[in-house]
Image 1 (tube, rainbow, N blue to C red):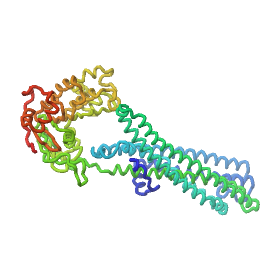
Image 2: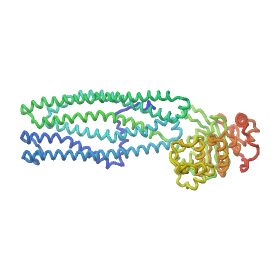
Image 3: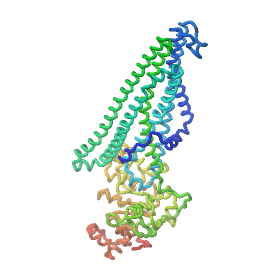
Length: 623
């Protein structure tokens, strides 16, 4: 991540700039107003010294033909004429203020709109990415794309490009007027430009290196904070606070050190430009004063040149700074567009098929590997089984046997490399993703709650779920009594990740969430592993009601859940090794029997049929 943040490319990339400018299309009216205001303001800013020249030469020194094109509009009476020039000057300043207000308002407004659209596009794109994408990209990097990188683009739109345009127009206007008034004094003023260019080049490289180190340090700070705040429990449990603090201090010091170098570069560069501009002004005074005494030029021209010389070097200083803003923005644009151009590997097909059956699940010779680089490390090998509608199938096996992978493939978080997965005879790759996942209700081992209320976490944005349905679902999973004890009941605020609730309470709310959505297929991935024994007895009754009329897939190690399944599918090293009921698998004395001997012997329930559950044969087993 830090290596990617470290790269700074060209200060201007036409390909990236053209793509960035497409975000201005919806706001072209506001952008056009801002650009017109920039041009007019640049013109107004360059006319001030020229009015000073007119006032001095026409009324104070009385040089013939000194007013030029304004001569016919100005009074020949000195006091009246000076008042007219002063009024023009004040009017121009007022006009410049209005223009700057308009330009600033419209560009800031447009910049915020563009950033809103860009952040929305990035977040929408992130939601379409498959789970494998997040396996490869750390959270800190993606957060940096939405925050720091977009902020860099915002600075370019609202400050960088605007200032560059304004500075270029002001410089062009000043150069044109200076050359027209006295080209010899203009050349004297421009004589220091090679020195300023040399100093600017050194400054640009120094600041560029500092900004690169700053961005790298910020990326490391974001990554460190995200990782260690998320793992604060483990950090404190193993007394690693001091070590973590020392590591953070090193990263933080690198950030401060990079900023100190940038501050030093600014502290040296701006005084150097000021000194060189003062030298240029001194040369103008020396040679211009001599020309005035000899009658070659006028006093008004000399005074105007001094003012123009002072204004000439400020845009040059700004341009050197805006160069770095533009360079950082181009690097941010490169990273943002690289993210946006990353294709979503799991998408709905152009033509989808509907699956309106009762929920029959079929795995047909499925092979899958998380690595798809030509040398796959198979996690599932030739897996075939069928789960009939309305039955409950339990998956057991050692850690890494492929149980959770089966659920991930069924929800199409990943696509299989070989074989097919079908629901009611339809390949899930031919189904609309929204329709596919809407059929499932999933309760994971690690329950995740969002910031909001308890009711919002159960409803999860599904407005069609009524308050009565939420309360009914909570009652059926035996969490209603707990919710009623909360000060605000279902409107009780839940903090980030449900930090104010116990793991068992969060798990029960997850059960209520799954039940409230009334899924056709229920998936429980170690769903009872986080609840205590007393709560498990409550959940067991709830599960009996939840699985009625639904196809259910259960991954669990607790025998109380597994024994009640219509069939148990035993996974071993990515393959289906055994299938059958609890008693049938024990009679085989195979893999399941060994697992039972190791883990479940002391927890066995009395043998015999369970009321309300009729064992059914599940077809299609393969070794």
